[in-house]
Length: 321
Image 1 (cartoon, rainbow, N blue to C red):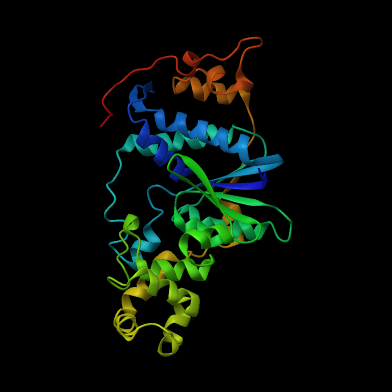
Image 2 (cartoon, rainbow, N blue to C red):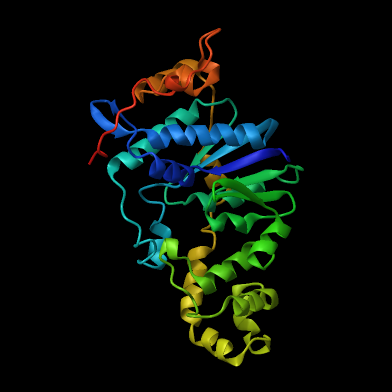
């Protein structure tokens, strides 16, 4: 199995999946009942990614959405952006903040990146650019297709599908999606197809997948789509549909494209982590986890792990309001 020198993890995506599958694991934290299952399962996912995919001496990057304001830039473009997503209760965001505190002390030399008004995928480009020409193999971990925009020869995308990890390079992505990945191509695909998860409507309604793929192979980008529309070898009805849908397609393109973040802006919001056994143990105890059960580095000497060590308590409570 290929090991990667750098792994960028969509922490908000990981936490969302973990929280959704473990909403009833709770603890009393600072006098308030708090759902902790999302934190616990996120840590276990990160440990597995680290174990299975990170090369010796490699580094993890924990990329966060700004949970409260990360969508503002795109909402300025389209007020309906992500309007279909139900607002989470405050404990969801509180758990995400606690997860960040844990990760700050999880290991020495990793990176936590969280920038106001930026979504996690907007941070990918400046981080990749910071690596320069170093011959790193890089893995991008997210179930969000937006992360596939950065696939290159040494940059791969991993999504968790049907209970297993699926890693895409350019060839395997093309085999499943029908076109070669790249920033321009993925943006063109989503500008035409839309993205229901973000409440981005189709740019062209009812257009068949075969026509979309023909457009991508010939035009390769949204600007080229309109520059060479008359020359594209696609049925006239879809040329006309594209022409009439120009406004929606261009609006979608602005939504699905990267929002600009400079290298300097990215560095300003990047923190270097440092393993601190005492701090990590303290946070785990606050969350009602047994430190030696969740992290072997915190285990007492000669004490083998037991399943019941994972939690000091296992309570089932209604989710806190």
